[in-house]
Length: 457
Image 1 (tube, rainbow, N blue to C red):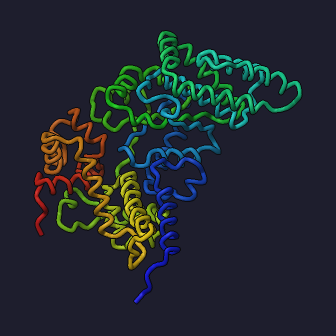
Image 2: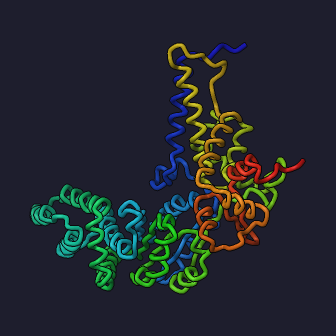
Image 3: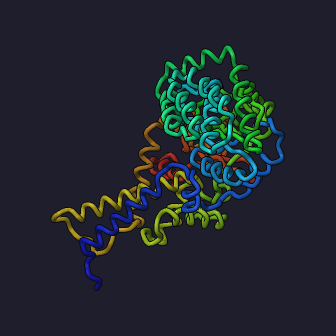
């Protein structure tokens, strides 16, 4: 009979789960170090397509990428940046890092592009002539109401002495980004100013871009992430009413867009008329259509299941989860990477609670070191079922039941369908044809609620 784990053993196990939980945070992989540690290629075709689309496109063309929330777009874009950077000057940024989502419009997007181009030029030490550089900083300072006197003084002293001016520049950028993020009044003033003078803003952006392209001797590509998180009203205003200003900068831009835009015929036609191509990051499809509704379904895409397991193993040491439970956890994600990470993280939380309780004075020592088993996974899934159920009403149950039975909605532009698609209650799959299914956690919820019957053997 194996001896009971010691207090030291329990503490080490708790520390390992804490480290795994940090690796399971929901932020996308962005740095080269994060990609080297955690990246597993699971959609190589799309990455190759994006690379070739950019390389074969005209200099002024605009590109669009969409996909379900949490399917891995941000990480894919980071990998695309590293692929293209030897040949392109790539600027990748999240618009939500600069502007509150509620204040995003075509002006704040374009102003963010100007800001990020200048900062990227600074970070990559592009040799912009001092007079031009100072002119651009004065322009940015004027519209963000950030004082440029320290920067101007540092420029003069720095160039006279042959020294650097990084300290003043760093403070300036911190002030600019902070102002854009938290000062709604300034954002409103920028919007009002350039809504009437959008050509002036575009002209300034093109000037900055031309300086960077000339000094770096590389074509420019700007990738704007997180625009896929806009709600329908904002997406309509940005892409439906103002796609032409967003198309005016004279260099390649890749915009992300919400997946529900593809269901709106009017919006889609507008986008197709003003951009080169819409590319879609698909949800991982483990099962053939209808197979997941059967008792004890067997995945048909074992290669994809293995890729998801590899991603999980990079973040969660394999010995912290029962072998038989790992595939079950992966399949409950429905092929959405974010869902797999969330489930695994919640399982780690449950194990840490057990370990912490055992370590407290007087607590019962378990017979074996806790790990993620079927019981822990079920506790986590129950938590998520409740979270998915909270916004649902009886009409939503009927809508979801219809998706389950028919594989498509009665009305693809119905607002509630789009909400549930955006919220991952409903998942979109693509192979030879387009079809929809329920998130596996939502499917279990509806069976428990009696809305759907259990599958028969």
